[in-house]
Amino acid sequence: MIEIFEVFSRYKRILLIFFLLILLGCYNTPEKGNLKIKEDPAYPRWIKSGNYITQQTSGNCFLGLDKDGDKNFLLVDDIGKIHHFKIKNDTVFLFSTVTLSENVKSYLKPFPKWDFEEITFDKHTNSVYLSIEGNNPAPQKYVGIYKLIFKNNDIYSDTVSGIKKLDIKPENLFLKYIANNIGYEGFAVDKNFFYLGLEGFSTSGIFADSTFLFIVNKKDLRIIRQINTKPLGIHTICGLYSDKDNSVYGVDRNNKELFHLLIDTADNYNVKKYGLTDINTSIPGYPGYNYVAALESITMDNQSNIYFIDDPWKTFYVPQENILRKLDSTTVSNFKKFIPIIYKFKLIEPGE
Image (tube, rainbow, N blue to C red; front, side):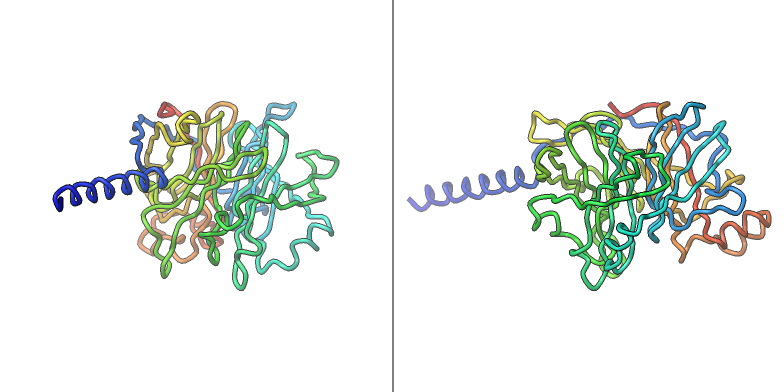
């Protein structure tokens, strides 16, 4: 009788473990694909044009081509700045400032910091979204995804005339892992879903080996899936982009890797296939020299070119003196002014 009870108890433990794995989303084993990218020979480049420079650039989204065939983007800096960014003939950069209307400034005035971390364009609705991180003393109060309303509903306008926070539910889950300067640095959108990437978990400035990706139904703004990235080898999520339905690319800043996830909507929104590849971060004009990069944004244009932007980590951004001595004076000046760097890669194998 005792042996039967022990066997029954063992089976109960096995069932409990099985159901816990289901709840954590770890019971399936996604297939690993061959994700490959190729460096564009004209990149990396400094994000500047004449005297116009961006600062602490943390978000980038591709809007499309204009009538001249130039590529148009929006950039955000985590000091509360938004820019229109145009690339002509692949390497000519043009910038213009996007102004916040007085009512938008009034809305943002109580925020401890205008910590703009991610900007995303929804081509299905012609909408632009901004992810703002929360900061002390009340990070959970201000963190969120905000819809930006451009003047005359024109995304190429130089003025943001309105802002509205998305009411993502359940609130307790949306806010569960939020901390000072820790929020959703990745945000992407396809036809049916929003994808929110938590930057990560930090203790004394050291990030853990995994984070979470949330899938949100666009219709009712409810979180329908929480994916733990540990089985995928993803430590941080600092930028997301969706090229098509159920497909998400992202940048893992701490591992300096590009990742690609394919979501299976028929299997509880689990990751059915994924890919990882390293991102080479050399100094502009010096392909043989690397530096400490903090890649925090990703977008893709109409030709499957992927763009990453480095949000300068001021403590380590400027190379050591023995490296600076080997660089020209303009490059040294750019580093010391903390001018961000943009990278361009061609997607060769999407890992599908």
